[in-house]
Image 1 (cartoon, rainbow over the protein chains, first blue to last red):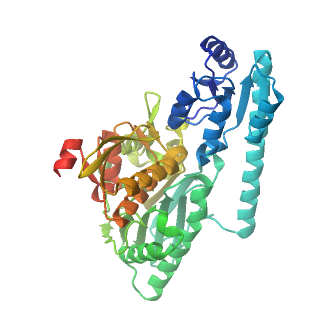
Image 2: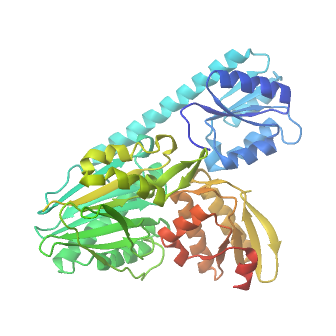
Image 3: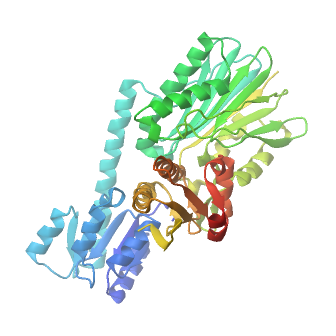
Length: 380
Length: 111
């Protein structure tokens, strides 16, 4: 189910005629409607996609509305979907029972449909407003604590230009994290990670990961062991020992720019292959690592790739949110599709700064995740 | 249920996913179901994922966590029926090195 801008409702009623009338009315006012003629079928529909609100009949054969609501309450991912009972009953006891199950409201079936729709619009407005306020509160708390998973500026690196672009999903911080760590004039580390989760739950863990990565890079510099693979190995082993993070997996691309040697050393953990644009022949080629996701198994081996950029060559490092694409109304993961779309944008040596926002406009309707991309361009 | 039980034989239990879009909304429930089944049957699980057309990183994380659980209780999860896009994703992020992936149940059982 592709996220759409209109409200999504799941209508549950065993009276098919009434269901059809409701669907027509809701669709006319711009709602996306999904229907089920029984509570059991509604549970099946929820496995495919979650609506913004559920409007359910009370009196249905098999599982009635109260039992349906009780089933939803047992599951974390369904219990918070706003739920409204629609019934011909005006029985006080039944209404109380429904409201005890945190149903938001009880609407009598005789209510004119346009009033029902208005009521649901108001309920969703209130729910969304509350969610926005909660989001703002957490964002303010994060700001007050001065914790950031995306840098505010890029370092100046002799012979290279580093730039990045990050869009969080629905403006809620998520699992992508970026860091650019200049340890001295010679070495700069580029970090791009993606915690395997979404929204707040992933975002909270980005700081644990970033703390370990930053520490590992600093300790590596202090001990003159600059190898990105060695750093990844240490970070992975620490994560596997961390009681909290050991169940949280993350991909990581770690690159070290060595300005003295004019090379980039790359090591990757479960990350997507990088894309290397060579200006001389106008070609885009993949650069692959072979390390597994961080947190998967201790003592994982990470290899290193040496990358040499010539003047005006570019290197792209990105997370999986960049490669989601639309496919006949569904979403699919399409790395090759992204590569094919990126290639013509770079023709004739076009700079990242001129195209970066266009990269995010490729599939605006199917954005379901954080999107992050880092570009390294050789300038001399 | 997001996972149906197809066959239960001496050497393995054959399971099948019932969802199309595997994402944050169902990843935790999927992990809970799969780890419960692993504990219950305590044998190699062959999971047919042909129903899944899209899988996000939350779900991949849940799948890998389930595999870690399987390994911890000395069993395994074998994957079959991956659609080409999903199989490509597994290859891109090296999950094909972690999971044993087969085209069909028969191939998985034959090893």
